[in-house]
Image (cartoon, helix red, strand yellow):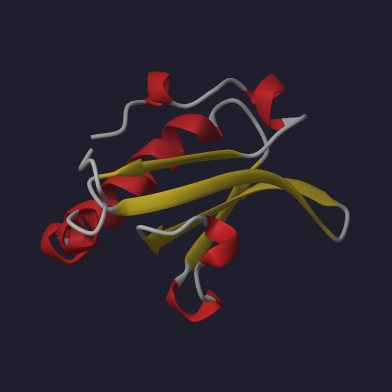
Length: 100
C-alpha cells in the first residue's frame, strides 16, 4: 500500500508532476490551477502504459487542496481506489515484463 512517506513534499509538486504505481494501478499527481484555486489533481488508470498513452475514458481523477495535509489524503484515496477492486488492477500488472 502507498504510505504518505512514499509521496513527496509540497515543494516537489510546485515544480514537477509525480507518477507511480501499485500492483497494476498507475497514478499521476500534479499541481493544477482551476479558476483562482491551486490544487492537486490526481489521476488513476490501468497500466501498463504511461499517462499520456492511456485513453482518457479509463482514467479517473480527484482534486485536493494544494497543501501539505493533502498528501495523506491523496495516499488514502489511492489506497481506497486500489482496494475497491484489486483483481482488476492486478490483471494489468501481468502485462508488464517485470511485475512490480
